[in-house]
Image 1 (spheres, helix red, strand yellow):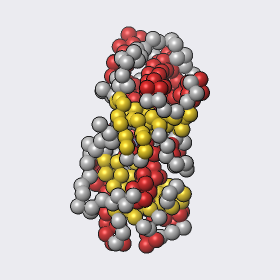
Image 2 (tube, rainbow, N blue to C red):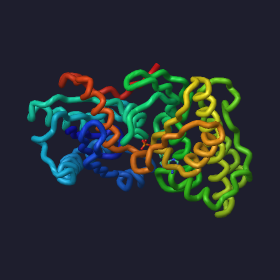
Image 3 (cartoon, protein in one colour):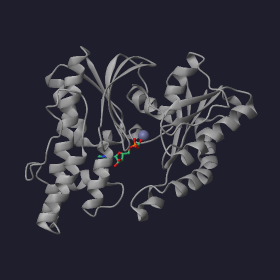
Image 4 (cartoon, rainbow, N blue to C red):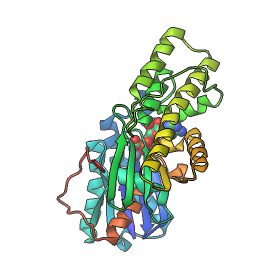
Length: 331
Ligand code: KG4
Ligand code: ZN
């Protein structure tokens, strides 16, 4: 069994997994209420809250799994990318447990966790991964575990970051993603014509900062929006982001001659994205493996899933190895 910890940003999470894929527990302590008054994640606050939450989250994951720390075969933690002071917390805790129990430590790339999250209960297969989170927008060709080729990424803001910034601009609470989606439900996606940046660039890169600026200029022109205009702004913005994501993902899978797209990351919670991508995949005879909304946002189950692949290959991490806030997955 593996005990995995995730603390790269503002969620403190622990999960117990019986390899290869039997998830016994997955606990997440979200700090979102603590950061909301500041309109974003405050690293120092996140780090201190990880310290407070780690022990109860670990204990609760073990109790729920009906096991104890002495039954673990390995301890895993996210080693990057993320906030250094946050990463250190989970990483140090997992290393301390590994040292105390004389069991291996396994460090996991947070993005590899997201990449594997659509495959929580099925074997990994060759596919094109669309990972859309608060920090990254990535299209990756996945051949097998550990063999990844980057097809494209965002040149500026990540998709989730654009949702959060536009949400803030529109006066919605942090984080903006779920708020914008909620508000967009009542809106008309064709009321405002926002740019579909780089949709015809012929590559698999993205850019969302122009779209964000376009929303800002529109807002400056119309002044304080009435509730219907606010909903229309959210729906039009959301449609622009999603059209680019879906178009590029379909083009990428065709380019690679592959049959499967896997969708993951916090933005994968968005129903409009899920439905649109599902529709386009069906039209094009492509299989879609979408992460469940539960495992979309940061969690330790996906870290345990990746750690299980590493455990099977005896890919252990030396306790002297440090965290890497800028860790990348593929070049
Ligand atoms: O993967 P994640 O939990 O953290 C990172 O690794 O970044 O992703 C969080 C991001 C945030 O930007 C959040 O606003 C976005 O995912 N998000 C959404 C939705 N739910 C979360 N974006 C759009 N629609 C949603 N329903
Ligand atoms: Zn994440």
